[in-house]
Amino acid sequence: MAANRRPIISGNWKMNLNHFEALKLVQELSYEVTRDDVDAVDISVHPPFTDLRTVQTTLDSDKIPFFLGAQHCHSEASGAFTGEVAPSMLAKLGVRFVIAGHSERREIFGESDELVNAKVRAILANDMTPILCVGETLEERQAGDAETKVEAQLKAGLARVKAEQVADMVIAYEPIWAIGTGQTASADDAQAMCAYVRSVVADKSGTDAADMVRVQYGGSVKPINAAELMSQPDIDGALVGGASLEAASFARIIQFRLHDL
Ligand code: PGA
Image (tube, rainbow, N blue to C red; front, top):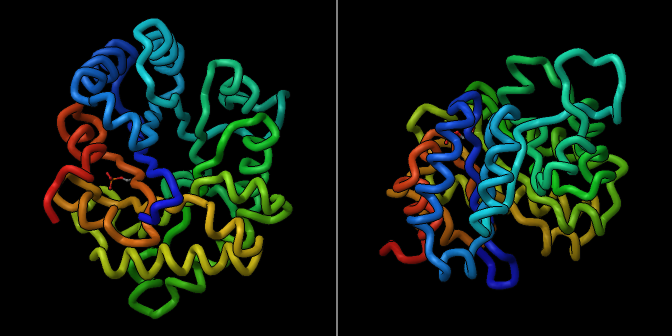
């Protein structure tokens, strides 16, 4: 983590927790997280759509300083897209960060690089911040193609996005083989790929944007590995799945700076 970039820890709840359970988790988390934590780290929670209103009301009424996040959205503003949610609907609910191109959306729901790019631009057009996810499969890594894959996803995902918008974005490097497997990338490998992400951003959007963009690592981030990952110069945050579903473990990750390396 570089001194000039504010760390951001995001909890991606995926398809877990109904709105009662969501309320409980956010309240428990607010008891675990201290004022110092909030001063030092941006925290976002990304519940399922059906929980957003409940979580928003709780954050608001209890003055809990976490950012509300969403897990995805459609790229169009409105229309005949049964089952989808428009970015403006999320913005109206106070959503600040929206994940775009999570590998589960790409792999299970067939989202293409072009669609992910359309979503990134729609999220920005609605004054929210995209968390653009990129990452390689195990086969691609073993074949030495990890950088090629990540570069292609980044160049496509950031197409027609202005440099100053890229500067404010979050990019999550998530090796697919590390997601939900308990198998984290080593801190050195994660650092190398996050530095590579930054170099691709520099190429595409210039060095100012590359210096400012926040790069998260995701894939089996736990309390035990968060401090080492976060100590890397090009890792500015974490996108956390499983370990964000429990207040104590997510809080320990948010408190990475208090852990011994
Ligand atoms: P995980 O998920 O922390 O459970 O590996 C990370 C993610 O998919 O964002």
